Amino acid sequence: MAPATRVDATFGQLICAWPRLLDVPAEAGHGPGRCSMSTKLLRPLALCGSLAVPALVLRFSGLAPNPVLGLLLFGMAVVASSFVLAWAAEAAQVDISGGLAIAILAVIAVLPEYAVDLYFAYTAGSNPEYVAYAAANMTGSNRLLLGLGWSLVVIVALALATRRTGKSVRELTLESDNRVELGFLAIASVVAFLVPATGQISLLLGFALLGFFVFYLWKVSRAEAEEPDLVGTAATIGGLPKHVRRPLVIALFVFAAAMIVVCAEPFAHSLIETGTKLGIDQFLLVQWLAPLASEAPEFIVAILFAVRGKGADAIGTLISAKVNQWTLLVGSLPVAYLFGGGGTALQLDARQVEEFLLTATQTVLGVAALLALRFPRWTAWTLLGLFAAQFALPGQTARYVLCGIYAVIAIAALIRNRHHILPTLAAPFRRQGDDSSAAPEPASAVR
Figure: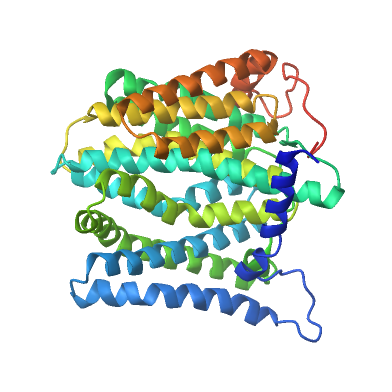
């Protein structure tokens, strides 16, 4: 067995059991030793509620806690609310079309990140220092999603496929429908270079990106509905009678959204104060810690899909989330900045321009590598390695070097997958069922 295969197989053994600690399989029967449906539902919801209560008490008591304690309590509440949102969004697939549900799930799963980032942008309208925080949070979450999220999901999926089959599985094959999301991401990533090129995120660009996001939602909503394949708590909710399920899903949405609104501001303040107290670069703290906390539920949901042999669904969800970040999130920043008292453009300094350039080149590499709708193992390890390298090689020169490395590998991938470029760029604009110009699609899930 090759060294990479041994690493993947060992990794698969390590993660094979942990999902049972996070969720209870809903497909289990009600025989002896099995939890009842009400217990399956109440236990995770009660746990999330208990994690949110301390933050509510702290928020409305008027107390000024230690910044580290505030970061911990408000962070736990944000993460718990994210889990509730993810469960509700997944269960909603029973009642709405699958393509639209995946897009909404991708938005909702990172809603805490959006709340924090838009708060930073809004505050930057009256306090220019917060522009750096808004840019840091956005670029950090964007690179985290692709560099860590995409890579980890594929490594897990391939490791478990290798373990199940006893053969080396070297690539994950996406669904043909994923070409639409990939096309949107390709266009958005090219447009994203306008930000480092101009040194700002203008209101005009923001409206254009928001309009593109609306078009994306419209496009995926027209996809054919499929029977959802839910797991864990979401499956328990989805299996409830309609007259119970729909009000419950709405209630979960309202609860989680309210918690995020209540906790987003103190969570953001706690991040900054903690960085000051511990002597940590506040830019880096906001860039990595906040997105890691707010996107944890999305990562866990995707990994659960991968563990259950649904790697294509897992990576498809994360691709959709990436589209949301480059359209909805980036497009909303100048709008929030304007409402906060700023001008018609969010001006970026040299450091922020470098971060946006690095983020855009990383995205182009991700798109270029997936043009053939195949995610090879080497691509996952490459993305993960380059993501880790930025921590070992900080500084302006290192960021530009990483941009160059991303660009060179992306060009090589574009040349290799050149026959898929035009079909991918055209996919968002083709009519449903019109595959006359599409490139041949892969037929298997793993290889």
